[in-house]
Image (cartoon, rainbow, N blue to C red; front, side, top):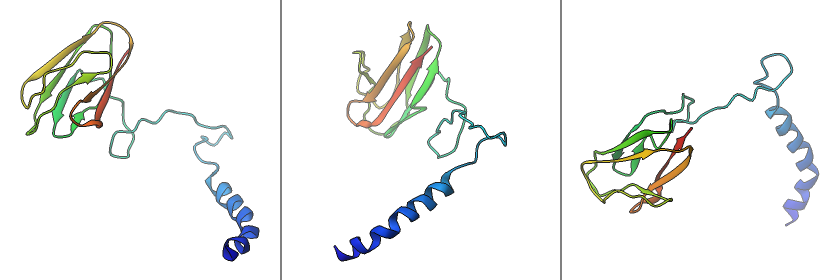
Length: 131
């Protein structure tokens, strides 16, 4: 407790130094802030978001897990797994539990459609965005 109290006078200047070091950058040199969107790609790098209508179901992962498609698009999930998985949507539809084969769903209207493997839950999930 004494050590913590002794460090309090140093905490504020240290926080200010850290915060000032984090500022700047990304402003294109014009003094403004660049708010360009950055999309994660699973590997910690940026990339173009997926627009694929084909999703691979492998052991414990959907690839791509998230994709954006136009209304009327049929998305196909293809199994390439050695264990059982399914595709279960929060709005009701679901595939059979399987290790091989395919499952298709046509998305007629715009919206966000989260899905997951009911066996693996949130650890194996994704979203179809229709716009």
